[in-house]
Image (cartoon, rainbow, N blue to C red; front, side, top):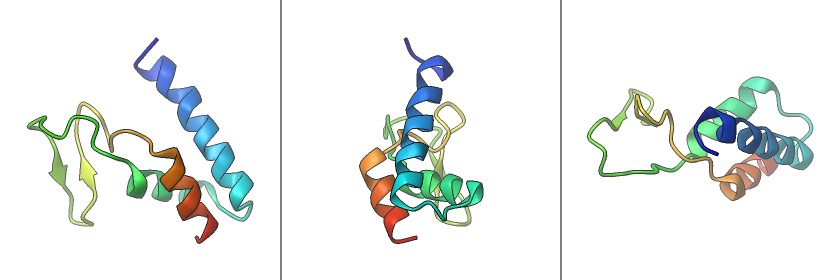
Length: 78
């Protein structure tokens, strides 16, 4: 159970927790928080780059692994 089949419910659950912590968040806020709090899941992979905004991105992994704790903490203060 991996790939998008596993990732979608995990991200949806994280978004629900974020909205529980701060119901005023917009969909754009949720996306912004998720990308800013994501962690590199395989830091040694050669495709990681930092974009102009200083956010890391990988064509295989996107922004990386969702960090639910960090996302909910960020949502509280957003």
